[in-house]
Length: 217
Image (cartoon, rainbow, N blue to C red; front, top):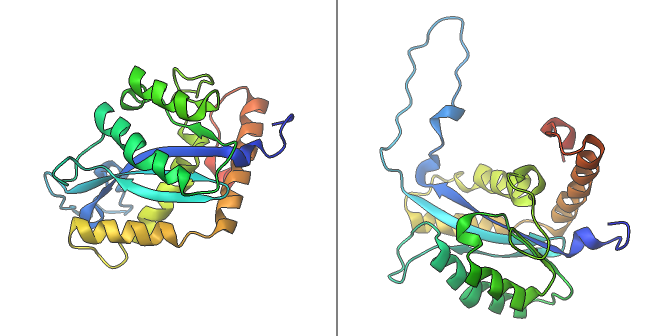
């Protein structure tokens, strides 16, 4: 950061997340406050339908979200083969459609991201500008508070995609595309500047947990 002042603007941050149909959320996040037992219950489907979405953002914009699907076009979760196929068939061609030069690529260290063949593919694409487990530059494990998609994008998108109560996975997918496409560059600039504040805080506290309340944007 001290050697390259705009280094934080040159990182492509990546991550994936699940989006559930009908706004399903983990019931552990539901809390009801009352002086008396309200006898309230929340109905949730046994196997809620969901999409798994992968996305990349940097200070200059967001590359279109990618929805993990199998060869038949059915929505599935990510694994090593699907992730590598996505990098090959979607992400690398998308990079060629953007004016992206001298950028670094960051990914967290999930097993599906870090198979030897996948790391070799990313090294061929980014050289030493790869921030990843088993990469030239290591990414610290369990560091969601340092990933802009975790501390900003996913919560922001999820807060908006259920506004019109999508009834099908296709509707949900359309909403995700729309919300992400509407994110303005000025917002991303603030998100990335916030990332530098987080780094400063972690350095000052020698890696201890950071209170989210001090990073309101």
